[in-house]
Length: 136
Image (cartoon, rainbow, N blue to C red; front, side, top):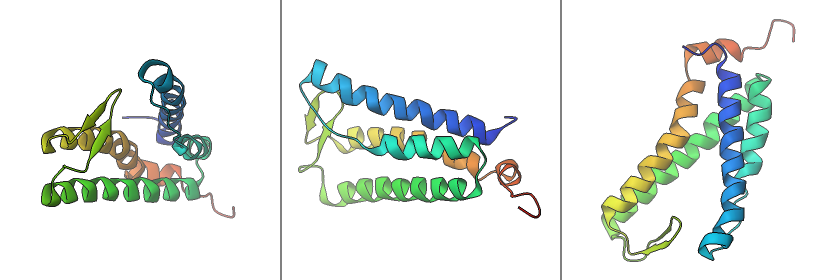
């Protein structure tokens, strides 16, 4: 088991933040598709405070990740009901009208990336790590 969940999840979010910045730089260079993704701001904020074991950062991270996971589930449910004729995926290249399987694969991959740190932060060990000492 991990010795320090706060530090591990913090480093995980730092890595995701760096990947987010790198993708914003590399997409226009290699795929002629520019976009702005400001999620790296949250990732670096969460990382800094999770490493320091701030209980508020743990609660906010769980909440935001839960909100994003709910949005992914809603997206997949909507696509299953209404179809994917209006959906466009951009994964290096544009995929217009992806199949439900393609969309499900992307949603599942994102859910794993987001669900993994959330699950770690919900463990009893993480709860103990993020408890404020008495009198603080």
